Image (cartoon, rainbow, N blue to C red):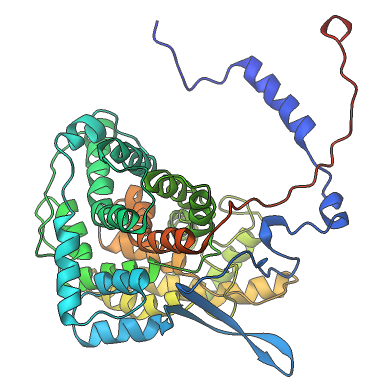
Length: 454
């Protein structure tokens, strides 16, 4: 009889109850011992645990000695992300490769440097012989983030210098992973789609060395390899906007923590992938899309703001959708007045929605973006305002691009691998000790009781 490895037996359920009963810590103790849960204080300010030159997030300004929320800004190596994107759009070219260069090396490349870097990444878009057959096809997963992490860990076995943490070697490894992430994720999805999902088709397209990262993602994903210039541009912008977001986000901090132990690049990046997979981090755009499916099903008139508001109040009051009381995509740990990434996305989302005949859906998104912060502010005591974050629109963009939901978070990873690589290199260059935070034990001391006497 075939063993069911996923079965939770009654014995395990009983032990789980014991685990919960014994593991619960009294909430008041966190206040008593001044514990900054989640490395954030009661006002939501992050506990300073490191320094970085890679990126900066600006969401408050000082007025009369007091820090006041302001429109959010995001800087890569000191350059405003809005300026980077504005110039890329004006010159009618893709910009992710330039952004990767900037994040890794701290300077904007000239034309010769950019062309050379583009060729370098293109040259690394080649998987080891039989890797797709032996690793990706033989154990397909319904979660592409897990498939991606497994592929990354397996690449360790193909690297003759896997444990070498010298900067040249780590840079080489990071550049290879940046180049290979789209293939690993898309091929993982194709295997899942054929073997697990519906088996309707099975194809692998090799990347085209003349195409950008964004173009290659669409080229490899679609059976006919076709895409419009606007589609490629918007996906390229998504990659730029997701490439980096400071050292304090969960997955980048994970990269610093794991790197500080002295481990190899593949282990560090796999750990970052595990962090990004979580619905509180990279998986948030999936919750936004699912919530909007629910809103569309229950709001009859998508143009009626009063009807939309009533249903959002139900969601907020835990009476509708998943009854969590959360309006997904609204609010951010740092931004309050505005998330610059969402602002950039919005104008281009409008354009794509017209091209795709989905402008009614876009109008619904825009209405929710307008209404949600107001009702949240009216119903809850808050230390800062809320606004739409980048996840609010990103899932909708991917839907319009015909990208399967299974690839939403992996696309985030295809971009953020640039930031993770920079943070790994920064930790190796500047770190001289293992990152080890303090935890206070609040458990009582007990005398051991012999087995026969229990």
